[in-house]
Amino acid sequence: MPPDSPNTDETFFTLEDDLEILLALLHELLSHQAKGYKEYDLLKRLSLAGLSYFKGSLNDELVMFRQHFLLFHLLYLLRDRLIADQSHDLQIHCLDIRLIPYRRCERGEQALQVKDHLRAYYLDWSNCRDTSRQDVIDMIRGFHKAIFTGQDRQRAREVFGLPAHADRRSVKKRFRELVRRHHPDFGGDAEQFRRVMKAARILLPAPGSLK
Image (cartoon, rainbow, N blue to C red):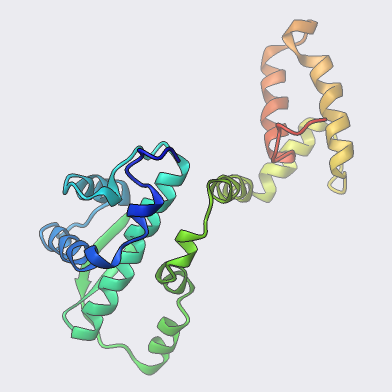
């Protein structure tokens, strides 16, 4: 990240001095919005406070990750405090962030809370500090790969005319054959070529590596 970026390491990772301010601001925003926020909208509201932590373009992968992580770090800290005070609980989801009534947990539910892996991940600040730009890019690629269902892959293999056990080398070889056959520059059908490319994105999750 360029040195003049609002989210430079020097400012972003010295959180302790502003932690109470950030938690108070977050609590205030949530207290005055009963229906809650989507993550993007809440980040925009926080950016208006003028604190450097929420400045910078969300089109930048690393800025987006750090702001997302910081927000959820604060949300889980705030949630723990609210539950300890028995005043409220927090709904924490990227599409639904809002205060909800406190409810006393049974013993089994408390055990589940202790094993909340998302909470543990976001409360460990090193998971933010030690994540590089390349790590973020790899996570995004992994997410896109994971969203394709088995049915998507089956349809893609049908476009390629390949069996389920076809390995990556066979897929890449078939891809080249289909490109030569269907590319409009070679006299092929544009619609069929689009289907081939869509299938390739599913079967070859890193389509920039077709050597």
